Image 1: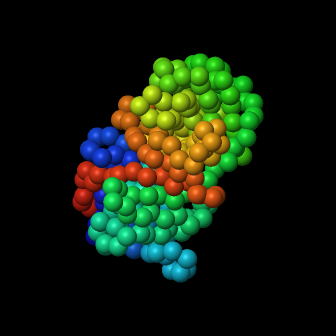
Image 2: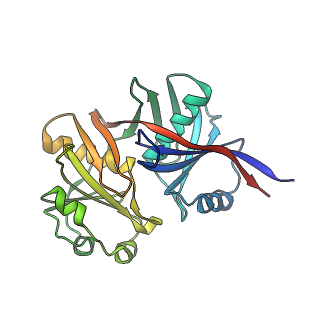
Length: 265
């Protein structure tokens, strides 16, 4: 007998379809084995699929895990925002909490214009890594690194960031790091592009976890607690980023594009 899983396809950090970053959101009754979760994520073929199970520990309402088509990852912002959108739309309420395996407790709250996602602030520090800098297609002015693989590459202008044509195979060979390329923006305070080929995502449409790193980087540099951000991918994605202690608060909207059921043998 075949099994079915509720399925939502959501465009996150978007106020209309076909923009922002796509995520599949799939609430489950219990955890299957990891090979099945990875097979489902590969079939969906989005940057991330979010899987949820009711949290029995009492720490949060839901346990949340994220898979790319290639692997499970430690943190995904846009698929968390999409999960909050699905659950708050389906079940009602103003906020929902998630327990994760490697990123702690996360929360999505409804606002008057969309949602707020609270992520751990990701700190970085000036460093040097010549290999990716040479593969990005343009020399960054500064490199800031993080032990969990969030690398920030600062460029002198938005035009430089938009014109990047990186060696994706070369970057992918360096591991599953995020290569976060950023500069001051024109229509927004900050602009970025994010490449993660080592995790099966050549260029991400909008990367919530990268903006948790950018929140630390840019609030330090700008000397204020919040800024507007645009990820200049082909689809594009907008957010407002705010630092609140050791949290990065990302504000954005979501659009449900498809709702249905996923069929399994």
